[in-house]
Image (tube, rainbow, N blue to C red):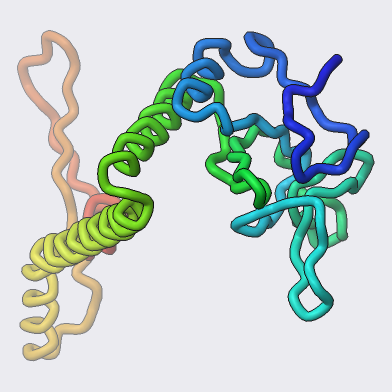
Length: 225
């Protein structure tokens, strides 16, 4: 079967998984990706790897070595294989999107972790947005946009953590105040708080009340765990 990958910047004859539309990935997803950029290609990663911003099949100088597209463990490998503590390679077994850069090599674009519609649509929408943004504002502006989005997400996450901390402190305030009052009075023994539980059944007229100690889940300081 003929390879779906261009030969550019790859060694000839290396074993790799050949993409079959409709079997490995949905045909409409593949068409959507190709509609965004014909230079986007699907590469199956047998193992989890670390890769350079730009990959090809050529090694750099001794002073500046680089990871390459090469053969390892009997298959074409795009980068440096990450391993388990025992030295065995960490499996990946997913498709990745790589972009062929004319006269330079290959650039990693995205991992395709799932073929669920939501996951695939997210990738298509992101790449479509990137294409339109770059066409209007340029690549440098896109990079700035990505950094700004990350900074905004980080700020929102921190705000949420701060608010949760304030909420927890507010919920615990009365318990802390009660504990301080007891310490001032010299009361240090456990308070053994209790809870009234009403027992009943369908049609019952007289209800039974049982008083029992509260559990750890029902009382005490809120930790946020």
